[in-house]
Length: 324
Image 1 (tube, rainbow, N blue to C red):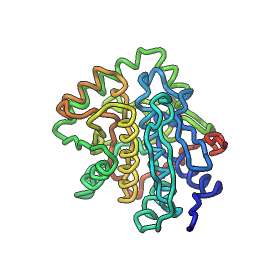
Image 2 (image 1 turned 90 degrees about the vertical axis):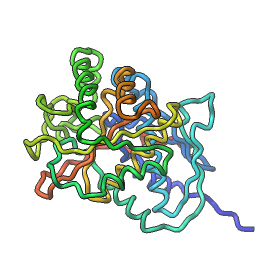
Image 3 (image 1 turned 30 degrees about the vertical axis):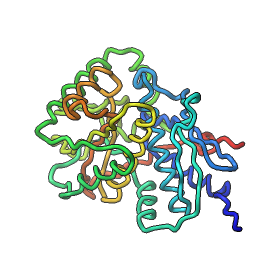
């Protein structure tokens, strides 16, 4: 009888170094990982919940789901398949997933996705028109279905309907002292290992047809002054429990990595989804009350002449690992 051991500690650390590159709301990185002899546990770090921005912690769980998928990609390229049990203990809601492992062959797709993990960045600038290849958005949206979620592509003719709740969210937040204090704490960052760096956010666009979240002390110059030509997608699930939020995060990660592999730029938007009435408005307008929206993705193409983005910082992996 052959006994197959799981990945050693060095392999787990290498995989987690890739996993923590996942996007998270305001780059809060709200996760903790416990390495056990029989696997790894993912826990939500509730101390990092943005209580004004994300009062119901949905975006926190979606962020953890993105990191979970990043970890699965990382282990795959290191030769390990992952079995995920989501929300294994109803009495412990912050325990989001437990993972066990088995050896597997590395495929070309594994290598491509792992490369995308290292290359992906959030690009919040306007995307120029006419550069998005035909069929690319369909390929990106199809990646969601393999993770228990779906992606609704918003046609250009319906973007004004999406602009309404986004504009209303911005108006409310502009006079919300708690939100503004939280935003100031987690954006405009310089030299920090967390938060949204000032050098990676463009100034607020007061004339934008589709307003996106404005960050403080923005330093990134726009590549074009023309209207934004981003394609918008809404990631959704048929249920609205914590497992669904986690799966939405996994699907979001898969879509972002697919877009990166295709050479496209992306960023995430969730501002109106933190407000129940505006989330319901988006659900009714675009999902016909048949699914629940969790996050929105902007997809576009940047020409090679665009100024490269700086890397978004991450906390050292030792800060998010617990050993038995």
